Image: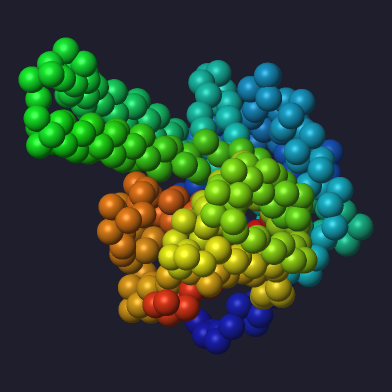
Length: 365
């Protein structure tokens, strides 16, 4: 037997057989189509998974594996991908889609698809690697229902406690001294704070769970919308928000709005006592695939050693009495950035302010 130190030492027939066996042994369905979306290859796992006999799918249109009500939107998305510019780096030519798939027995399933363009000579082929995510979707939906139910059940006794406090204040006011009234007021403050924490926990659990198709988001325009939403807060603090040059990034527009609104609202909140907040937001070059967006302030800051803690849910570095909030805002930012396969870091110095740096993709990863 001849030993080879590299695959490149195999002849063309041997290479073809080698890679064919690798693909056929893959645990996930893998298929290929031509530019017209006609199936030209599907591995054995794919035939077994979809319920077709060997060779039965060859020549069939890809729509045979997609529910009827998704044909138009799916073809539109794939065609848009085909017509997009092809770069030399494979990862830049890849896009992940979440769709519904259809088996031969007409059962539907949630699928995550990695779609890759491969030009061969004058022809273009699409290769799809398919993963059934139905079970994770089912768990995700159950968790949503559970979180909503728990939120409702936890808030019910809080509402009861709050109503008792109001009842005592309104019906027995003449019998209550100032100390008792203060205690009742504290109960109302704490129940309101607890209700806010429950609502925030529910919101956090549902952030970035409903996957929407990513698109190019103009951050300059989006920040104008953020400023409209925060106008009252800016005026209340006499703050200044300077928006510099910002790029377009690839992502979910609603989540981008939530991300930057949280970061700027956070900077407006934690400003130096007696000093109006000054916040700068601007973009700068990052890596070849990511932009960096900077949000910097001259606020109270914190010790650099606590930089990792600030992104944990309900973790607060300052007292609740001085600065209101649930402690979920930055954790939500981290979750959104992770959803976009980016990063978020913070550099800070107590008494001198903080600088948040967010990396977001330029285009489909």
